Length: 238
Image (cartoon, rainbow, N blue to C red; front, top):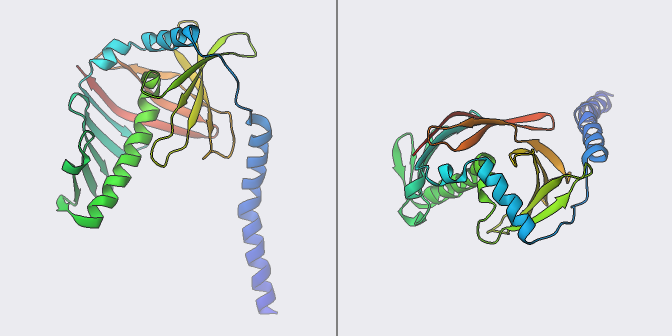
């Protein structure tokens, strides 16, 4: 009897934990899931991408030599952009990434330099963090990077949106984003299509911006469904 009662309690706990999550996922899926829109490549798409970057002062971003910020209150970055070197701090770890030559990077735990397998693991984690957090900070500036495809899409409101597809790199899948722009070309949100996502077409805001000392504009917050992605202590200098 005791075993049967314990089993019922366990089943009850599992249902209590999983059922709300399943209901939330079902609600979000039927409300937000969208097929990947089709668009046209060419001069108009490139012009819209240029308009978006100009609205954010792409020249100022290109001339920004140093960017510092904290992501999600978990990771801190000191990126010497002009030298392709970035120091990344999280928990008790520090990695100094040389983005041009990873072999000359270094890793530390409690200020003690590490080597061997531990160093390799920290490099991989640091690169993963760098790629993820830098994308959420600087994605609009990546529209003309090598391998990126640009398409122009008509929205339901008959306005132009920009469909950007980033190529597959290493173990990352192909990712596509539909940028929603205001009349000046400045991003206000994007929708995401990514094989790692459970729901296609999920929207994240790009509406909270600051202008750094270098003149580049960077976001401080993204709203993604019930969650938030926050950046603090942002510094950008020429």
